[in-house]
Image 1 (cartoon, rainbow, N blue to C red):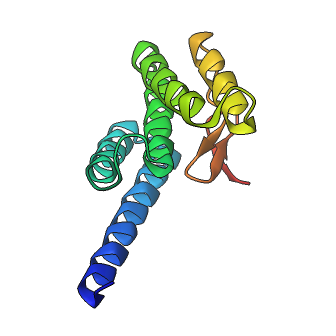
Image 2: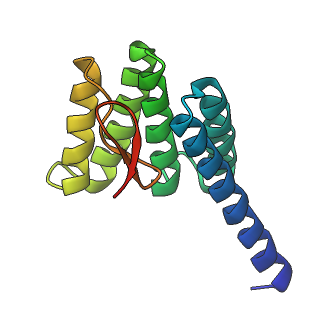
Image 3: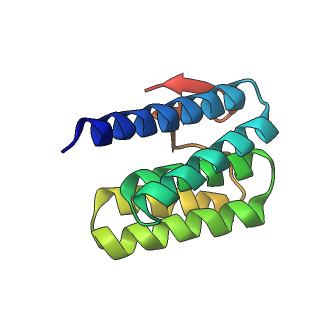
Length: 133
């Protein structure tokens, strides 16, 4: 692998990580519009480089669905979370623990319950504050 390719890969992962961290900070500050824009930007980059079905891309898509929930955009959140669930189900199968977690998150979104679940390595408490897990 060429040095140039390694440097480009490192810059890509650094950029994606920084944008996702910024989105999570905006969530913590309850600046959901800013969080949504950063997460959409990050997801767009990730999809272009890694593809729609890559596990890291699906994590970002899930996080965007959680942001929609926090904004009260339940229909969009449900659609986003269902898409992630279906892709993970197709790749991992019904019995995989991660698929079970995603099914639970999706069903909570459908029921309109508060966000609880992984977002960028953090968990939301029921009052939507971030806690490191």
